[in-house]
Picture (cartoon, rainbow, N blue to C red):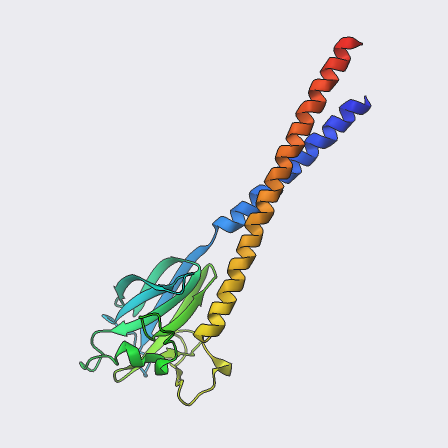
Length: 220
């Protein structure tokens, strides 16, 4: 009877560890969401046909061009992306018909890190859905600090305003936080692997105990 009870406890522990391991891997797998990029003019009018290049800041300090996108009639670009650090650059023609400010000058040239893709607007994306607002004044794009399209645009002027109220982090700070996020994800993966290993050990112990119990039963 005692051996049967011990086997039951081992099997219950095995099931418990399997469930925890599965949960860890499930959380690791859900690392993407929806990023909404919304562009308006200073009066709040949603701007269509505004083109952006979207880059991803990679782990090896390079920037990968995801694609070029254009706002629809609602001034919206809706993207499903993996979590990470992204760079938004505006290109093409401004609403007044003139060329948009060169990407090398956008956001007051704050994101030039020597990667070969200079400047733009850093967006740290790590949530199921997020909206990032921008406003274009004449030919110059800015972060829009408004809480949503129901509020008048609030351009963020990086040459006169403090990044204490930044819409996103500066590139250096965002990279540090992104690295911390990667460390947390890595820790979750390691924990999942450890739990998986424990499950294997428990299962082997259960199998050996069950086989020994059968042998003892046959002898008795």
